[in-house]
Length: 79
Length: 148
Image (tube, rainbow over all chains, first blue to last red; front, side):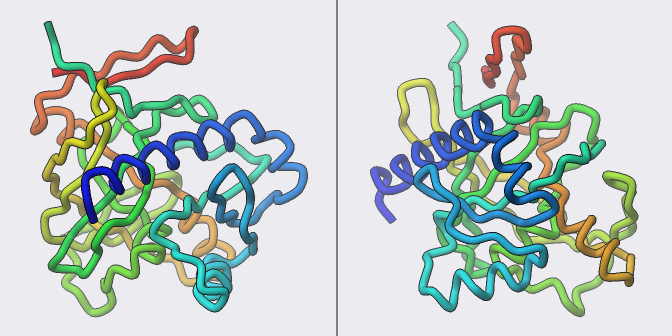
């Protein structure tokens, strides 16, 4: 992978995280208690089970290396 | 003047770093993941969610102690060194090498396993110290950056 491709991937990831942050309430309403895969400012797939989600992505030939995956919940998690 | 690295974002009130992770020994070539920068954590971890996403083989690997994290107990598995590609102020990629421990929940119930999978990967104080980074956060303005 070239440096330019790495930069593009990082910029895209940053934009997707910003998108997630600004749509988090909407996403919580729609995908509460689910793992959500998103890219290019859109949800690609969601599932309450992470293994199932990854399986669906791979089955649909989605390149998982450029996808963000987050667990969406109305309940806050303390680290 | 300090080098400023601004890949940091504040996402749901946490300081988050987007990185492209690479570890050839684990056949992780270039994989986009996010880390929470957590100064409350001494060590850095690859979450169980990212272990699954990156398809890191941890089954049967020796356990190097346990850690409590996010209200759950995890076994730690030592991983080879990772390279993290991150963006600098000029939007150029820089590579930093870091040690990460994979975490694997000790829980057996499906519900608790799913809870454990929800936790994020963490870059802790060890990362900031080893890389010589200063973490600057202006929470009120939603700004965060690394400097060195």
